[in-house]
Image (tube, protein in one colour):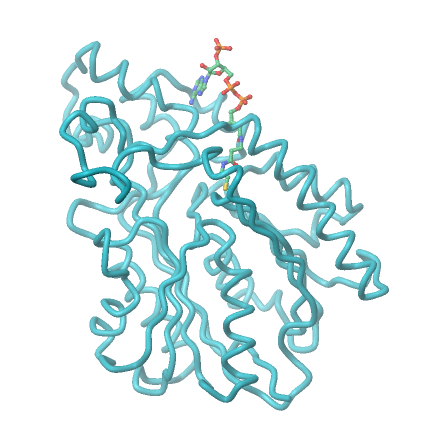
Length: 351
Ligand SMILES: CC(C)(COP(=O)(O)OP(=O)(O)OC[C@H]1O[C@@H](n2cnc3c(N)ncnc32)[C@H](O)[C@@H]1OP(=O)(O)O)[C@@H](O)C(=O)NCCC(=O)NCCS
């Protein structure tokens, strides 16, 4: 049975880093509040006109170069985003076209921050069935489009005009959410292999009863038309998040899933080389790390520089670790993630 191996990776983040201090220009927040609660120091935002597929293309080009491949060598695309270029169609086919490989099957998945786990299962199925040999997985997000401020010029330091009280109030209403997310894309190229590599186990869960812990209330085809005029004034394009409940969800479900998977495989945390966790909040990951008794150096973090880039997060982190030589052939690595849906779980991957 063929497995799969990572043969190339790349990532792309748009524009200059936006510090916590820059966010404080458009709402009442501070570096201290944000860093203490989330571990985030900065993030990037996609400029107007740049979509998830555009950032995905940049990341994919870097991954192809890293793999020493051309785009035409890819025979399947899996694209994960919760912020697609259009409400429909999805961005996967756009990415293929922009990469110059129209015709290659391109699958959109929308498992938000948990996308990489579902992606691994899809990649495993594609190589095992013989449907594909060289698969491009891209996670990319353009969260800028749902941010609760309009004063981008002030945020970017291009203007020092005073914000109106209404502008400030609107941003403040969603400040607990807005400080957490950033934009960017990660691209990973997986190839079928006869080597002992690929998916070695998984615990994967979805529970739609908790969809409203993090969701966008406006838009959607349960209303006619699917976008109402009053949605704009109500900022219904901004996701609503029950941060406390999601935090609780993550720190109970993720350690449980990891323990169950390790037990099933007759392993302890010592048997895992690197823990690659989604970066939603440093405190969530520290909790998981302590609970599983994982030494600090075995769970690398990069949330301080990017914030939560949702589907982009694990691919970006994997790219950094791959290029740094942290991920080595033969290692057994665990990925852990939880995302809106709610979807969550963990996977063991033989590298
Ligand atoms: C969002 C999160 C950081 C909020 O932390 P918290 O300790 O629960 O904070 P609360 O929302 O209860 O707010 C505490 C106070 O800080 C204030 N506050 C909220 N956001 C703020 C900000 N950006 N800056 C300054 N103050 C802020 C609140 O208004 C509140 O003030 P009050 O006590 O005067 O009412 C935290 O809940 C979290 O990280 N949750 C997980 C979210 C997540 O991972 N989402 C993605 C899942 S894929």
